[in-house]
Image 1: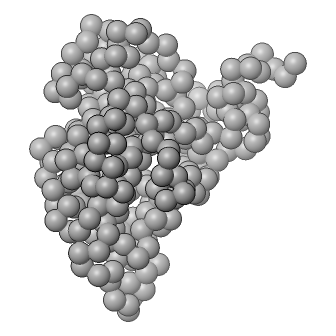
Image 2 (image 1 turned 45 degrees about the vertical axis):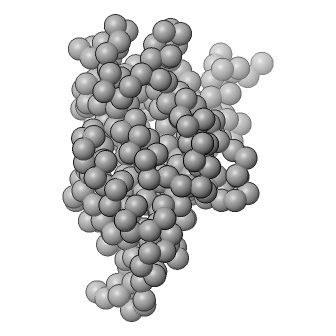
Length: 287
């Protein structure tokens, strides 16, 4: 089948660049939301997932450029950021790549991909940011359900990336992947907060977005396992009483990367339909 993009001219070379790292359901929805009329670079560690995303986008008239990228490889992330900057001025970077504790992933993998990988992305794209650049890191509301010491939070926020896993309270040999996931996502939120000042020195912004339960292939796997009742309870106690959609997240990212959000930086935005609030105040049921 002929793709729609093959029938029309591509966005001008040298024009503004949008980078989306992670071609899962949320990443593709964001690419569709903000990738039109810009040079769109899409990256993922999985060739199969990336090829599927590229095919779908091209059929709908987008001109994405695909890259295989393992975010836990700092040199590869650096080279990718440099390549993106050579394509034109980078307007937006959205980092959605990560691994879930529900996919037979070990604690070391969770920390290396979700925690260190995100730090690599922040570092490498800071080097090529310019006035007006905005970066969004997709975290998770799981970050709000872990309690960390002040020492560990300070470390996650400000330790050099090559020392990020060197803290006594980070147990890489643990089997508690749920805690590792929550800790890694808390680290993402803290890292963004700590990076805000430095990014601001360039006239750039950096923000984290924490989705709650969003209807994705990942959530579907979780609903088939031991977390089903837990997820349904969160939804029942939430203000919205529903699971979110990838378009809910993409809409927020679209706003945050627009001029209307130019005063928003260094903070975390929850897109959870009130799930965290419900869990905090109504865990024992409405009163």
